[in-house]
Length: 176
Image (cartoon, rainbow, N blue to C red; front, side):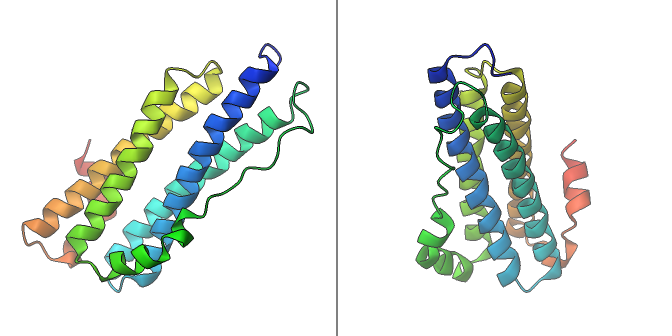
């Protein structure tokens, strides 16, 4: 994977991975916090599911980053990834989000997913490593699925469907 890349290419890839890792870290925390604050079990299940998805992305990206950091060209020269803790920096905003009506919470989540989707879409074309390219391509597809799920939830709420009608599996299945 890293044997043919220059030191600069590896360091550039680590920067790209660091940004992706932060996107996933903050998304995971955002959904985990939402899951802790919502009262409806159906909503909690969906936010837990999204949090788990983002956590898997985070772990996979960290594994790839660690492989790059261990390559002989940069071994011992790469600092640990600096997590930005945007989720905590936005604590005031998060409190506002939790007090928002459900449609506004979903719109915020959709915008966050669109940012991640756009990032992966832009970076996938520039990734020289097939594993990174495949990971970013898959992440873009999954972020797009999250957008569609959240949009479907928003539509359900906007059309007056009861929150008790929410079913993650049925929503995901309806997208295919």
